[in-house]
Each structure stands twice: as C-alpha cells, then as structure tokens.
Amino acid sequence: MENELQKLKAEAEEALHAISSKANLEDFRVKFLGRKGLFSSTMKQLGKVSKEDRRRLGQLANSIKKSVEELFRDRKEMLESGDGTVAEAVDLSLPGRALPFAALHPISQVMEEMCAVFEGMGFAVAEGPDVETDHYNFEAVNIPRHHPARDMHDTFYVSESILLRTHTSPMQARIMENQDPPLRYISPGKVYRCDSDITHTPMFHQVEGFLVDRKVSFADLKGVLTSFIHRIFKDDLPIRFRPSFFPFTEPSAELDIACVICGGSGCRVCKRTGWIEILGAGLIDPEVMKMVGYDPDEFSGFAFGLGVERIAMLKYGIDDIRLYYENDLRFLKQF
Ligand code: DAH
Image (tube, rainbow, N blue to C red; front, side):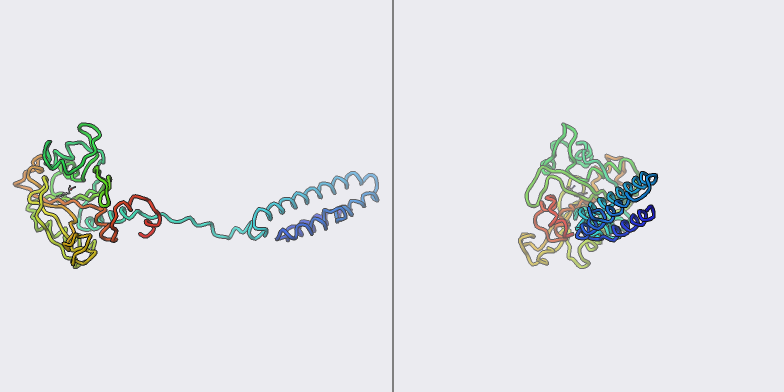
C-alpha cells in the first residue's frame, strides 16, 4: 500500500502540473480529492492492512493528501490571479511593460544646440548664479543707479542689493575679473523679469557670449554671429545688423534675420517688416573693461546676448511662448 500511495502522489503532482486552465481544476479535484476520488478509495484500503502498519500508513496517506491539497490550492490561486491560463500567470519570457521615455524639453534642446555651435568655434561654457547682486547685474555692466536702462529690466528684487538676474550679462564681469585675456566664453542660463504675455514669461533663458583679445573688431563679431545664425537656421538666411544701444557695448547693434515665417514678404509675426530681431551685441564698452582692470587700449572684445525662447519659437514656428511652460505632454511630445 505504501507503494500505491507514492504512485498516487506522483500521478497527482503530474496531473496538477499539466493543468493549464481554470476549467480543468474541478476535474482534477473530483478525480483525486473528491469523496469518491482516488485518495478516498486508497485510504479505504487502510481497513485491510495489519494493525501494526495501519497507524504509520494512515499518517503517510494523510500527509501525502495534505501536500497534494496544498499544491492544488497554489495552482488554483495562480490560475485565478492571471487571465485563467498558466502561460499568462508565469511566462517569464514576456517583455516588461514599457514606460514612456522622457525627452529633453524643447528649450533645453535648443539651448544645447546653441552651445554646441559656439563650442565648435572655441567658446568655453560657464554658468553663474540666478540670484545675483545689484553690483554684477547692473553696476559692473555699466548700468549705474538711476541709469534709465534699469527701467527696461523689470527687476525682481530679493532685497535692496540682491535680485534675480535680469540678463546673463553679469557673467561677463564675473569671468573677466577672475581671468586675463584672451577669453572666449558663453554663459547659458535662466533670467527673470516681471513681465508676462504671449511673448514674455517671468522666467526665460539667455545665452550670453563674449570674446576678449588684442585687436578684436566688429568684423570678428559679425563673422561669429553670422556663422552661428546660419548653423542654427539655414545657410542662406538673410541677416542684417542694425545700430542700437546697450550700456555695456559701444558701438552696439541688434541682429535681425529675414522672417522665417513669411520668408521676408511681411506677416503678423514680423509686423510686416520682413525682419525679426534676434539678438543684441556690440564691442565691449571700455568702461566695462576698466572696471575689471583691463586696459582698453591694449584689449578689445565683443559681446552678445541671445534669447533662447525666441530662437526656439522661430525655429519651430510657435507663436505663444507660454506653451513652453504649461507642461502639456501633447505639446512637448512633438520635439
Ligand atoms: N543683456 C541684454 C538683454 O538682456 C542682451 C545683450 C545685448 C547682451 C548686447 C550683450 C550685448 O552681451 O552685447 O537685453
């Protein structure tokens, strides 16, 4: 009888293993564990064995039945937790559930692209603090107290002398006062102004750039910026330099590109002029040089400041700057 029990155990385990759907569970239970099942009929034979063996065989039969019942319960649970088939419940070869990939924000993408173009021209990258002193944000770039240019900056003040930088130009002074020429730097980062409408957000991004060496001329500036624009937009995009004013450059200019929306024929975006202003630039003002201890008779340099959102808007034809900051995945996924 002992053999019979062992055989029954092996048979039951094999049968259990073969069950691959919920529907077959009940058949198994009736056949092996039911009142008229194989275990019951084998146990009935206990009455026929000798008294000495009965106790031992009884215990064995009970423990085997219990272990098969346990296996049956496990199998049942497994089948009921999946979609009812073993293949679904335990198929380790199935690939994991894919999570959607994140991507760089379009502003970060454009900023990285801009930096890469300048790095290709030998500019090093240096980042500075968003929380800046009045000194670096204004005084050191030749915008003294009560200078009318301060009005244009709509500054967020933290205290009397601490503020959120309104442009990346303070990095010119920060870098120059710690190093000697020749210098060739760009400085990308966030800037802040108290302003908000479809073309302004209170926080936006700029890339500042400057170069200081002996005999640097406006022609060098034009060469660097023209290459840059042609790399970022397209090779033959018409551009023009238009005289302007910035306190930290003299002479100063703004660079316009032919409107990328209408191709120069005039539209709403370029206000029918065919041109779009894209950056400010100029030769570094001798006053700025003197403040960091450079001799303006020995050294000269140029500087420029670019708005990243503006370039991204023109590159991708986006007419509302606020889209960049609403975190709507339907918008962000397009880049
Ligand atoms: N800082 C200026 C602004 O935010 C941009 C700028 C203009 C930067 C001319 C420069 C420059 O370095 O030479 O409006």
